[in-house]
Image 1 (cartoon, one colour):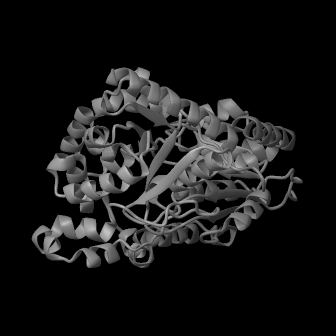
Image 2 (tube, one colour; image 1 turned 90 degrees about the horizontal axis):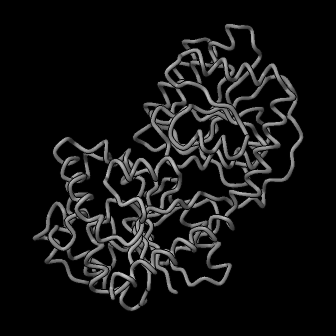
Image 3 (cartoon, one colour; image 1 turned 60 degrees about the horizontal axis):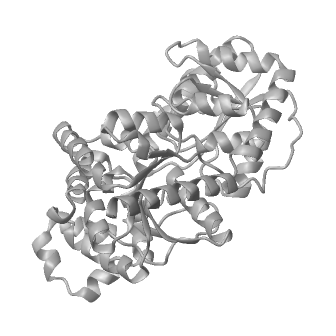
Length: 433
């Protein structure tokens, strides 16, 4: 069975969906599966070897021109439009695309969802012709914002259509009211054309079934998995200072500001501790990072707070091994939690808000503790608990690491996802009789 996975590139950002898609495709291919990963909009970024196809479809520059100046774009020679889809060019302009907010691309989102009726119909035709040559039996859409093309793909290619569910509700919530309402209506309308959905967490499976009226029997839970080759057993770091780590994208919804506030509470209580943070920060969030730094200075904890920027894979696991605890105090329900798995794989216990996919990760791994995100005192209290109980901290770290190695590896993810692919293909075959 040939599977073509379509992955939505996130410009120059290291996003969890890109990391997951690249790892999944690489592991499936290493096991002998016939899988291709083709980026849409922009090239995809990963901190592991890139296994994506060398071509980008629905290229971001052409998509923008089709949306804003459709008449002019139709006059461009084919040679120029192909040049505009060059991965090298798209990477160079990617830093500007990373600034894009949901409200800026609302009409583009709607026209992709409109499929052959939208202004991106030419991009859809190019996608179909490219896939026709590959002859896939299953095509995986990257998210719900693409379900509007499912019916056309099924009709033109005769292939089964799957759709990944990876946390698109945050983007959809950012759309202006009218656009958001229409996007939801289009998604609900087109969901019937998809043979199966792939949810990265049990939480998000239930969320999408309820919010988008997806048929529960066709929504498969395919948990995340990571490569654990860099995650050797570690020694507990020195007791002082107690190092609290954050490793994720810098954005208001990720909650780093809340961790700075918790640090201030801990330091006022006489605790010798520090917050070590790292992660990708786009230009659109530089102001937010400055606000975090200013909050640390005004709270008198600037000497105990550091930000180390983006890290490569080796730096990331060195960073994690030097922590006592890991905290991702997201202010919205996370659908995935990839940084949590990486911290647990490194043997670091986690402190997480009781929302989204986090409770199921903690329950499945036994690698951390949860706190009430609505209680302003709960986060520093949870950290203090692990500061005061080294034995519990070590037990949680070991339990979490063992669970990730047993149940959340890339091999387990690949096996469960391939099994879901086969069930989706069976459903498609049955409906075509």
